[in-house]
Length: 270
Image (cartoon, rainbow, N blue to C red; front, top):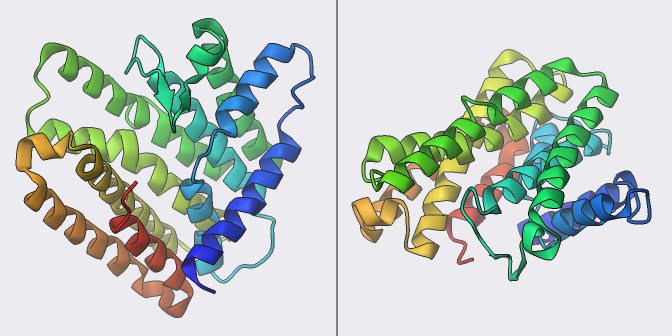
């Protein structure tokens, strides 16, 4: 299947599953469920849950049993975006061209919507009966993962000290790369793959995630660009993309979709 058709198909599958699992907007209290749905259905690309499904398939599995796990990954990712946008964090008014959750509703409801999506994500993990996935995702989004990356981003930006490759690498590895890595590992864990395949997919996801951040910086002319310049960042992205794809050799032809997704992300323009 053409990679763009594959992504469109999986995205449609994930959106349908998210719509089915999230409480309806009319559920009491209505405002929180409206806010949760607003944030989830705001035009996300669903890259992380698609990677979870593609990783599951790379391990030789088929079917939709992985979909609730993929949905949980997306819900947790959306929680990070809601909180990231808030005035006490990055203070963004728009995301994907639409008012951010705290602008559409208010700060209190946005905060609680993020909390609700995070806890609902772990409810889905719990429903799957796989504690190992919950453990790995917890590590990825915790104080030594996404939260840690956000802390360094905020504190260094506030003091004007976000100028070193060490800080940038820490932020990219943790704020972005960690959840990508966990998303891929989740697919492997759920498929009962061995340690080597779980590790390989974790390495793929982490390098993919940092590549994703580098390309973001190229598009936004921010972050790494201010330290290294565009030419060097392009070379870094290409190198990390190669490392990501090299991790897939253990899967042979079954890793083709993951490899193609990585290549597509490397050349994206938005």
